Picture 1 (cartoon, helix red, strand yellow):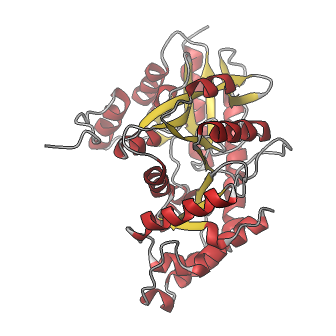
Picture 2 (cartoon, one colour):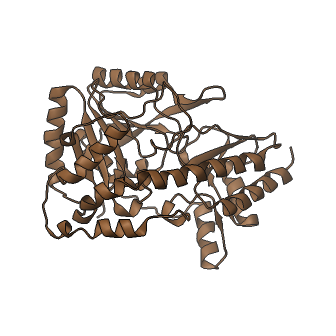
Picture 3 (cartoon, helix red, strand yellow):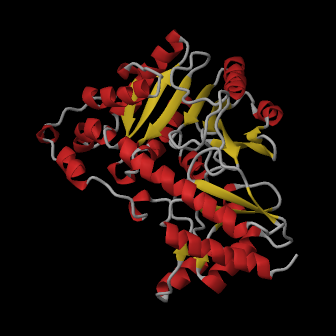
Length: 394
């Protein structure tokens, strides 16, 4: 009776089942996976936000397949600020990047077509491709202690087939934090031209980079080498996931990009899903970006230093360098699986971290921690993680 797009088995994995049992028994947890900024103690200008959402213009319904011109102009203003001007007519507003993915998948792929996705990577893409009845094909990111994470270009090229419709890049990647580099963008664009497919670049964490690197792609918006869809939104950019505003920027060879915009308008016109109130609020919300991002970046740096301090002196542990994003990755030279370590930490100390297998890390034990939680909670949880690993012996 039911579609094969929706899995029949919804049973929880071992860690998720343990979380539910603890919650059911009222047992507290130090959640070092928390990635919702609205629950992490940041200060929001409530008066400015509420005033923006109370715009009288929201009472008038003015549907447009691409979103209100004023909101798209505000998005274009953001790109101008980061040095990559875009035409508002190349922007399409969505209710977040998850919807943006599904609309681009609808545009590009028929059922059974292939979508290339990086691993390690965020598991939501498994769900989105399944719901669109397209086949996810993974390509590997590889880690080098000297240079960090990068695309395995040979494996990427070998993964492309005649059924490939798009290559997805997440920059910075979630959870590795690695940015797309200029040479990798050239390689991806070349493959897309050769095989007649498109490039999707998810940039939701792009404003959270550490240091500078001339090889780093700040944004793929405006890439003219192949048909390119650049995704971003308010969830991470201004720490407001509940406003549900994302966007797609379309670029590429002129004729191909024009055809894509025309067809994408047909898709988006069938949904018209973005709230009028949010669209009218967009210009004011963008003005809050710098203040909120400054708070988040301070938290990321402070918690990152705390984790390094707590795990220093443990020869079996390495905190991998973070190029960007909100997450820290701990690599553990241990015979136990990362799930065993995460379960033991939650059972013994009430501290929640994610095992690397959630994100399809390669063989070995990896733990993934969000760097957003309040500093005192993060310090306490990190100290308990260190104590657990230290007690296990060499």
